[in-house]
Amino acid sequence: MTWHTGRLAGFDLETTGPDPLTARIVTACIVQVGGGHPVQAANWLTNVDGEEIPAGAAAVHGISTEKAHADGVPLEDAVTELLAGLTQVILAGVPVVAMNARFDLTLLDREAQRFGLDPLPAPLVIDPFVIDKQVDRYRPGKRTLTHLCEHYQVRLDGAHTADADAIAACRIAWRQATRYPQLAAMTLDELHTTQVGWAAEQAASLQEHFRKKDPDAVVEGAWPLIPRQLEVTS
Image (tube, rainbow, N blue to C red; front, side, top):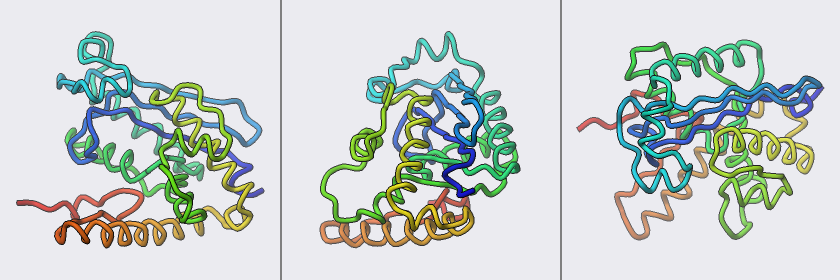
């Protein structure tokens, strides 16, 4: 059995902002699909630890500060349950599929750090974003989840809801494996390790591009999450 015919665990967060070091989790989903078993999904809506959800973020995912504070579970409880759910997945040898994993896994790690919770064990990760940039690097246009769904002919049931995005990421990963046999031929360990190298190369290339206008531009190359010790302290 190759990895793409086995169980996959999609993971997605909707958040208060674009910086994984400071944003807070608004909604989250872990969905297990494939492998001949029924779909299993767990969803969370948090109270954002009492913080505000900026209007721009609310416009993307549709969750207002008022709704989060009224209906959300305590953020610490959600983070505890997310860590437990993903740890169970990881220890079972199921890969975590996350679109732009560096963002979601880093953000979850920093939430764990804020609440004094143990970090995740090292996951095996499949990142459709990193893979797409490697296997089709010269294709013009954007590479958002919506664009990748269109490119790989994957149904997206409701963009910018955590559960729909998590399932779509798994579908894209499956399509990538069927379209590019070299991906399916890798073991999970090989695929994960290869993506570490790809992500670093992609970041270096993007940094070189940005430095044509800003000599001090820095693009983080660590993947699938930014280690805590790499954070720059002032």
